[in-house]
Length: 366
Length: 238
Image 1 (cartoon, each protein chain N blue to C red):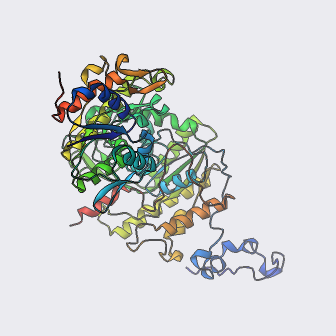
Image 2: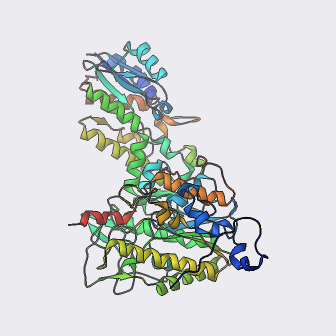
Image 3: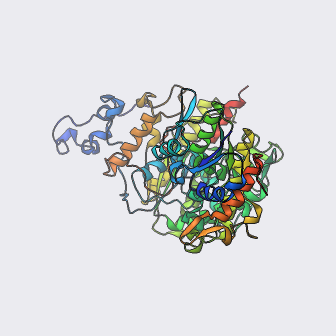
């Protein structure tokens, strides 16, 4: 099929000039590839994000998502936005230790939430609507929470300690949505491991960080567009039950899959995952005026960026890339100041490498 | 050989106790505080020319003035009262909402053993560094515990933190420090059991009292110094 050539306006307003009159002549330069992309270096690209609604420092913001979402959460806190953290670090844990125990990364200590199905189930567990079959994973006398296997380095000292921690955690999660005006979620993956009996989605494959992989118990799932969309709509509906005015900011992580469990090449599998997630975000933004999409994925992973924001492994996002993406986000919201020293209760540490559970998969490459 | 005992403000009670015992002890025992525990929150020591020197001005001055030393050397006998003053961790209002996980208190944020160990290590990092430096330079110190926590401390009496939480924090922090010392072959002398009430707090008759909610009194100091001297095989006349 032949593409229709459309040129950007060269000068003046051509909207009423006979043969030049068509809808594109009223489009701004950001709508044209040549002026918005081709003629600019990646770092000059402007207007990539146009916020749909304002975010102020009075907005109560909560966040969850894949590991890239940790950057977003940290930036909101560093810039003194009203970031909700219902499970701050206990006293006297320094910033590094708090981070290693999963405190301060998100709005509660739930660790990375890679899929919207996992997010839905997190709130279902918090509200007592789901009691998963996977209760505890034991290893060398230590107890691991199957739904947060890396939250406690080395595992909990006992089953009782893990249960106490999880009960408190879920109690706090249950309060989160009522304290949220804007929920930020970064979609990470479509691939997941699921318990066959109850459909519980695990954040990592059993047998990697902890647990034992049993093919009779666990099954691989690669969520499809309709499933992800349905889950997202269900989560939005749930969240708006707690706050009918809640808004949502969705992003897609630019971090590729560490490994795929499909029979695809990991590049193709990554493209599938990210494409589905990106399409869902687009669909949600078109369907709801209270949903915004921030193109962090495009700002890092799209080909005009030439991979400059990735580290040499072309997977981890470099600090410069994170800074650039976040600067664009906050500048679009009228906040051009540098991140201020954080003054909230939970300490944060500046880092370009957030804790990514799935990176352990690299160790299983034969 | 002279037995030198120094440390934070808890050493004052030891000094008072030693003054009571002095005439019963044939060996020379010198006991002086170096300064308050606030000084432990920053680095206070380093190694210079193979000997440990104190970089904290107050500590260094007191060491020179009261002991006549500018550094710690391997030929000297040192008892150090540092590392079990756990009030920096205990006196936080955060314990109104958080509690050690092993207490199993419902509704409180559980602090796991591992997270707690990190807190203790962070709180004691400069003290531990000091002991590591002593060991590196050939000094073989022993450690003298601070008294049991005082039940009248405002964190419980006024702020309302539950006493069992304070006691649990103190007990676990002491246990962690004891284990750390044991790994390095450093002897730790615990406070006398008879100075503790049934809940593990310092009995009022051994507490300094008044507005002081931290320290033992001379009676406590005497009891503790007897224990110290016995552990160091310093003879005490009947």
